[in-house]
Structure formats: C-alpha cells, structure tokens
Amino acid sequence: MSRQAQSIGRAAAIVGVAMVLSRILGFFRNSAIAALFGQGLATDAFYAAYLVPDTIYLILIGGGVSSAFIPVLTRYLSEDREDEVWRVTSIAFNIVAVGLAIVLGLGMLLAPWYLHLILPGFGPQKLALTTELTRITLASIFFHGLNGVLIGTEYTYSSFLGTAVGPLIYNVAIIVVGIILAGPFGIAAFAWSTLIGAFLNFLVQVWGVLRLRPHYLPSLNLHHPGIRRIFRLMLPVAFGMSLAQINLLVNQSYLASTLPQGSVNALTLASRVELVPVMFAISVGITLLPNLSRQAAARDMHGFRRSFSDALRIVLFVTIPASFGLLLLAEPIVEVLFQHGAFNGTATLVTSSALIYYSVGITGYAAYEILARAFYALSDTRTPVVIGMISLVAGVILNFLLVHLFSGLHGAGGERGLALAYSLTGLLNAWLLLGALRRRAGPLQGRRTARTAVRALLAGVGMVAVVYLSEHVTPLLMFGPALVRGLIELLWPMLVGIVAYFVIARLLGAEEVAWLLGIIARRLRRA
Image (cartoon, rainbow, N blue to C red; front, top):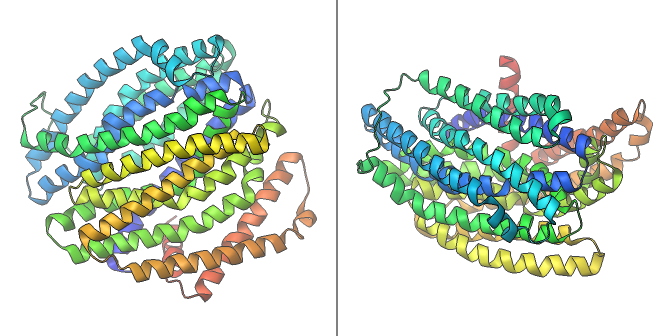
C-alpha cells in the first residue's frame, strides 16, 4: 500500500470507528422501538414517515455536499484563498436555511396528499399516523440540512472531531428521550426525539466549525462564482439522487405498503443491517474525496488513479466477506439485535429473509461510494446521472417483476423479491460506473483490483466452510440465559469467520491483510 493509501486509511479509520459506534447506537434505537412496538402498524408508519424527509435531505443537501460543496471549497483552500472558503460557506449556510424552511413548510402542509399516493396499501388509521410522524420528522431535516453544510466544511479542513461526536450524541438523544416519552406519546416519542437529537447534533457541528475560526457573513449572494459552481455541479447530482430515491420509494413504500403488515418495518430493519459494511466504504469515500479533488485539480492523473484503486481494493476486501457473513448469520443477527419484547420470532424470520437478499448487493453499493466520489472529484456529475437513469429503469422493472415472482413462489415472500431487486440494481449501477470511469480517467489498475476481488472471493468461500465446520463446537459453548446464548451463537461464528478469512487471504497473498492489521494495531496502541 502507498503512503497515500495509508493516510486515507488512517482518516477513514477515525471516521469509520465513529460511524460504526453511531450505527451501533442506531441499532439500540431500532431495537428499543422493536421491543416496545413490535412489527406492525405503528412501526410500518414510523419508518414510512422517514421516506419523504430523507428524500428531501438527500436531493437538496446530501448529494450536493460530497459532489459540489467539498470540491469547490477544496479548490479555494488549495489556492490559499481561505477568505473565499468562508464566504462560500456562509452563503451556502444561509441559502440552505431559507430554502429548507420553505420546502419543509410545504412538505408539512401537503403531507396527507402525497403520502396517500406513495403508500396505496396503507389504511386510513395507518396513513393518519404516518402523516403525523412525517410532519415531526420533516422539522428535524432543517437541522440535518444545516449540519450538511457544517460537516462539509469540517471535512474540507480534514477536521473530523465534530463530525464523529455529533452523530453519537444524536443517537443517544433519540434513544434516551424516545424511551422516556414512549409512555405518554407512543411511537411519536421517537419522532420527537429525532428532532431533539438533530438539534443537539447541530450544536456539536457549530462547535466543530468554530474550532476552525470561521468568518461568517450574513449574505445570500446567489451570483458568487463559487455558489454558481456548486449549483452547476449539484443539479445533476440532485437529479441523480432523485432517481435513486424514486427506486427506493417504489421499493420500500409503494410496493412494500401493499404487502402484509410489518413488511415496511422488516425491509427497513434489514436494510439498516446491510448498511453496516457499506458504512466502511462511506468512511473511505469521505476521506478520499478531498485528496482526489486535489489530484484532479493538479492534473495528477497517475496519483488520482492510484488513490482510487487503493480505496476500491480496500473496500472490496472488506465488503466481499461481509456479504458472505450476512448470508450465513442473517437470522442470529436479527434475533440478537431486535427479537426482544413485542418483536417475536415470526418478525425475526421475515426480517432475516429480507436481509439475506439485501446482502447480495453490499459490494455494489459500497463500490458506488468510491466510484461516485471519483466522478465528483473530476467535476463530472453528469455521468453518474445518466447511469442512474439506466439503473432506475432497471430497478423499477426488477421491483415489480421480483415482488410478484416471490409472492407467487413463497406466498408472503414479496419482501425477499424487493430486497433482491434493490441488490441487483446496486450491482448494475456500480458495474456501469466502473466502465464509465475507466473511459474517463484511463486504466484504473484493473488487474490489481481483480486480484484483490478474486482473493477476497476465495477467502470468503473458505471462511464459509470453516464457519460451517465450527458449528459442531457451538453447542459446547452454550450457557446462561437466552440473550447470552444468542450472543454466543452469533459472536462465535463471527470470530471464527474473521480469523479464517484473514488467515486464508494472507495465504493467498493479499497485501490488504497486513495493511488492515497494521491500522488495527496502531489504533490499539494509541488507545
């Protein structure tokens, strides 16, 4: 691994650890909701209530931060024009505050109308609850949007403390406040706690930016060259994000709402578990983008291709065995995370079956996080949009085809078809993006990447064999109450699988093993 890869890896490790901790807290939050309300009307309404607010955030803010805001700020910073960095940041912050206030107000007003359209399978009672929860959740998006600008600024300066701490406080607030208020407010308590958590995260990000000694300007200058460049770069991305969200809305709302009660909840929880290994790719992509942007600005295409290749290989090496692991351990994972209180064994079976099919697409969605940022660094936001349109058409066709196919074969198994359609769409999107980037940037050290992928696949197959053999030992380790036995049933094969994967990969000559172990060892020494 190059020094650049090691630098990216160290930064990614910081962001990755924070994201994993945040994800763990997120699972505690989801587990608390599952234990209190089970899998039914209330939880379907709760998770459906996030779809439109999340869509607004991703289209208006999420894609723009990584595709446009960070590259523009990075360029100003590389040119030693720090005054322009803060001028653009101030204008962007003000525009987001005003724009979101208008959009979210309209979203609250029109909620009953559009929710009726995208959730045709919800009855009047479930739709009324979804409308109430959506309006509360929309308010939290105001703070998430402002956080997007502040976090993008922190990433530009490679300052990760606020971005690491904020999401942790956000999730802790959701859990604590939600549990306290669940008695009098029901499941709406967790919508209100989301709003409170978003506000607290906003305060943390304000603190994180203040550490950089900013120069705030009360300006809404839409004609500033940096702002105009951000709009030019982000408009195609916003359009592309809307395409991806259309596919998700068709998958997890329109079609899922017509399936048996609890299907929206099952798909949401399964997709949250599937996101854990993808989080590693997101952390790599976040720390990679400023570096790729500097190399692209300096026209250092050799360095650009090497940085991209190193990042993609790291992601493949981690996510390929993760797919095998979720295929093997889907049921015990769901059982340990969610099967408490009102969440029963039937809910576990439905959720874990969806997780098995979601695991097929992990590598595709992880690779996308690296591929998309490579295009953003090249100031090419058009190509991902064009490919996104192709993937959208394919995804919608697959959704309708597979939900009916699986419902016919398995009776109430439509959620499996939706999960598989989502996975196949992600793999197709990543494959098309990789081909387009190769044409745009030249050779991407494809042989090295292919060797990493093949070694990871072979080591993953070997890992599966070793885990199967280790199941004969599992009964000998069982003791204690049901929760302890469940943890043993999950953690023992995970430990065996991780060790087996690293050993087999090392025997196959994978250099990523030494690199990852070195990162872990350095972190442990510092700790």
